[in-house]
Amino acid sequence: MEALRIIKDEHRNLWRIATTVDLVADEIEAGSKIDPQFFTSVFDYIEQFIDRSHHPKEDDFLFRILRTRSAEAAAILDRLQTEHRNGPENLTRLREQLKSAAGGELNNAAFAAALRTYTQGLKSHVGAEEKEVIPLAREMLNAADWAEIDGAFLNNEDPLFGEKAKAEFRELFHRIVSLAPESVGLGAHSTGRLQPSAAPNKAEVVLSVSGMESCYGRIKALKGISLEVRRGETVALVGANGAGKTTFLRTLSGVQPMSAGSIRFYGEDIGALRSDMRMRRGICQSPEGRQVFGPLSIEDNLRLGAYTQPKSQVESDLDMVFSMFPILKEKRRLPAGTLSGGQQQMLAISRALMGRPKMLLLDEPSMGLAPLLVEEVFNVVKTLKAQGMTIFLVEQNAFAALAIADRGYVLETGTITLTGTGQELISNEQVRAAYLGM
Ligand SMILES: Nc1ncnc2c1ncn2[C@@H]1O[C@H](COP(=O)(O)OP(=O)(O)OP(=O)(O)O)[C@@H](O)[C@H]1O
Ligand SMILES: [Mg+2]
Image 1 (cartoon, rainbow, N blue to C red):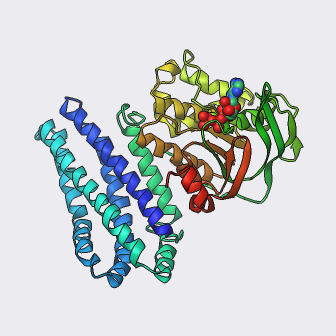
Image 2: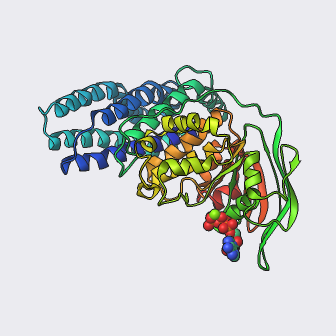
Image 3: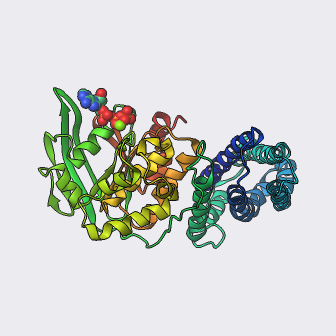
């Protein structure tokens, strides 16, 4: 039932966008200026992703097969498919209303009302699929049906929803987050690009940790951790509060003493190296709680991230992160403390990137962020992964982390209790009960 996981993921995104549009509608009604670029990015996303990929995928596979298995499904599917068909027309009308509103022919209140009518429609559509269609599908479809549906949904070559299309959708989503007002998104005026590229090579072991122990006084926080990360992999470490995730990252980067065990990075034993020497080897961390240097300017924060790097490459690396997050460029002379939470998170990740990581460590990057930004953080991680970056991701948001991870480890009070591919762990009963609340 992979297809259902994908559909539910896409619903979550759609819901986040609808909620964001509602919040922006409130602001418009309260007198904010209408930003045509932001709305165009939203409408483009819905048109290209929802109307051209999400709905047809449902129609052609899930709905078509469900019709043959359940007479009861016909009525609800008829209604939903009519809504699918009307999608493009509703969107065209909304684009026209945007034009009138931007031109002053339609007042803000009327435009806000049109937006809300539209998002209401989206939400009730998603709600009906979640509450009626998905449960029915779970009940009525057999293994062969799921094999056919899942096969189609997981077809990475498909021009409409394969890997290449997904990278484009991530780019479109990134544009929305970049253009959304600061209260809900990053709040830039120019959009950035995530620029996905080369496929990773998964052969070589980059990091090999064996028997790692670490203590706070007499309390052993890590009780013999062994794990491995390969080049180009995204590996997630998930676990409850206080399990020792941050302690593991701190011990790995050398700011917390290791009392037993070994760490090999690209074959070299680095367990005795100072933290700055590990950073020079390419272990760069975006710390828990972001920890940007508040009084320093954004640009100086970024330059600090590059202090182990040759000067000659710093300017071009700055350009690289500025092209991803134009808001950081716009505000580069301001103190980092003036940034919103989401902007600070992007700064913390960018600062780590300035160190040219051979392995990027991320400690709870989605913590405390607005829903649209949570999605964006994972989009950024996916893009870095697509560029071939090796990533070690620690998250309390276990579902989102495991969903993008190649492999994962479950940590419980200082001990690794489970390991497997991201998908295996997501479907593991124990993990679902303990971390996914299912
Ligand atoms: N500075 C410290 N002094 C003493 N004990 C600490 C210290 N930092 C963490 N601990 C303890 O070590 C254990 C692991 O903490 P750690 O912060 O690594 O967990 P975590 O998995 O990152 O949790 P969270 O999800 O809350 O970030 C916990 O029992 C915690 O109370
Ligand atoms: Mg932590």
